[in-house]
Length: 293
Image (tube, rainbow, N blue to C red; front, side, top):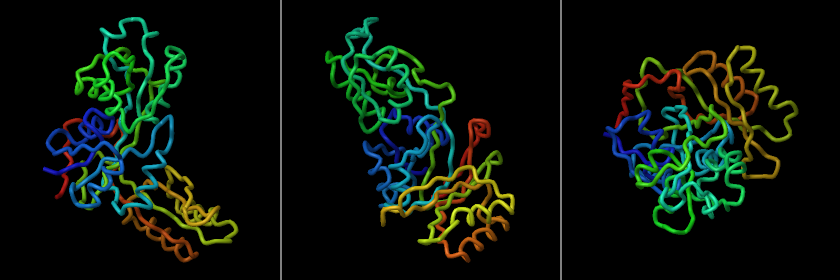
């Protein structure tokens, strides 16, 4: 049984972790994502569950920066999970008169996924960002009679014994969040997984056509990049690294030769992980991932 650090009970992260990993593990809940990272970095848990990308909001930059600058925890598996948000509160307090609602609480990414719903139905309501959707629901539970509601999961409402005032308030039906399980122990994939590698590439200064050179190393080998994004190195203004997701395992001959060519050009390459990847189409319920601890 593995110990897995995750955001609070009832959060989207918790819901996603149970979806992929089942209940046969010890989930250790933390209020802050920084504590989730540190739990595994400090050896308290074997793995951490980290949301890093969303269909609507794109990259979760804070979490990406933690993976790059603060901890050295390789990706062991990734999966896409449908982020279905709901309006949660007390039915006896709000009833059908939403003018009684004074404030809505949620994680900023979850709030951003529901902006159209909020504009159309709660334009008068103050919005307040908190550390997780589950924390928002907990705060509503502990503040009766104050006109507070939360945007969160069905698991969050069940965990804190509150009512679902409106289901599926997310603005888009195809809203998915990409999660990674990070840690120093390998995961044995099921037969349904695709292989993926994530790397960082640091550009030398004053290198005209640097990005073109890098992309060319992948292009002529017909290596598919599913994502490329630039992020500041935090060392110097205007200095960036490139974050790349590659649809190929690290031990593939073509990828190894591409990395060798890129390094020969003077670029620094850091591998964040080579791991099994599951989408909602490739994950089969009943499959069991082997977490080696």
